[in-house]
Length: 247
Image (tube, rainbow, N blue to C red; front, side, top):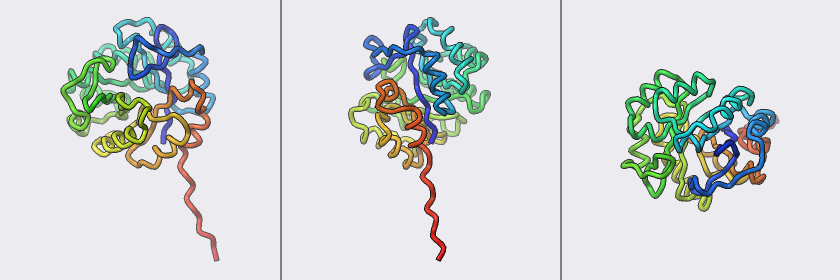
């Protein structure tokens, strides 16, 4: 199972949010570039980065994100404010390994499918769920879709992955989150990446036995130091197959 150490940026700082509330960030006093390089040094193969400023419609973090992409040493899966072809292709040209789309997928699914086919293994669909509905516009607008219908609507679209987040639970009921995410994963044709369910290594242990889930974003736990990147990666490794003793 792939572990994506996760960084969320607001005004140049690493932050985490409570249930997506952009006006109440928890700010972490770490250097974003050093943190990204640390993910790679710990052995991560990818990192995930969300730009909260871009969700609000400004590019204040753009230079910082370009530096992270340039020096991190691992591919960056980038999300936040990806609402046009031009913006998505700009960041692909800047070297982002993958682009995460959410709001654009609900507004112009034909364009998103076209982008996924034009950029193989570079477009990721984000499905953010609140009380049974897909949310858009930075988790602030309820869409007209159930998550099941949203995923099914894209059929065989060749996404690099589908990130599923249960905003409603937001760490308060991991069992319910796992049930929701694993259920939706059976509807998806692309690899499913679980978001918002990892607090400690035991959560990764449970995730890796759900065959329909291929990866997990791990962010808040890293900054709270309840889990390290090394521990997360080690836990995500497949268990060795038992070897029968020769008689």
